[in-house]
Amino acid sequence: MKSNFLKAGILVVILVIPALVFIFLKLFGKNNFDLPYYFPVINERDEVKIVKGDTVFNQAPAFQLVSQNGDTLNSEELKGKIFVTSFFFSRCGTICPPVNTNLSRVQENFKHEDLLKLVSITVDPAHDSSEVLKAYSSKYGALKDKWYFLTGDKGYIYNLAIKGFKLPTADASEYDKGIESIDETFIHSDKLLLIDGGGYFRGIYEGTDKDEINRLIVEIKVLLDHQKKQK
Picture (cartoon, one colour):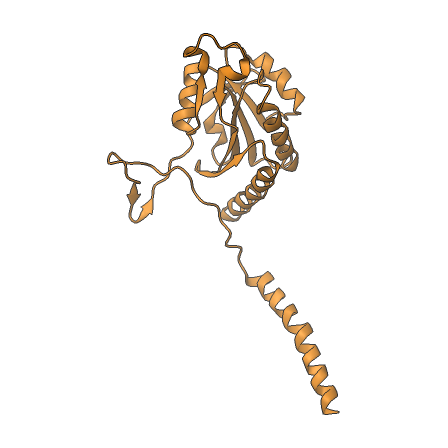
């Protein structure tokens, strides 16, 4: 008899305690998973800037460019939004197609989420007019007011890419007049940058890598969750 009571007691412990732990975590537990910040500010002594014990990080630059719809997009319109930035050009036949295919997957995952935007900026603005970008963006199913393909002044864009978004960008034909291949002409990164509602860089991803895109999708959800809880 005692053996039966002992067995019953052990069974209750095995079944009930995990359930109680689950309920406790569900009601009182917090998800402390957070994303790092990138690109710390460097001071005049080439040291990371620290104020009151905290590292100071760069924020995404302000910009004003023209979209595939011919409208002007001012970065002020992205204030409070989470957005993914990339650089590309429409005549690119190497990394741009897979990057934009992957971004279309990101768009599909968040097509009903107004807090998430995609921002793709051309490094070949002389060719990539709004009309060209309109046709190009339709190939990837870009949604209006969700995924912006942007163009503008070349010097402005290159300065924006290098100094603002910290990504290498160059027109190799300016240094080598013998270059004939368009894919060798415009040098740009395949990196995707995840920027939070405060304008801080929170993620860097290989735009051609599907596993990296999976990580991007998960980390967008983390930022969205944090941002919605703060409201």
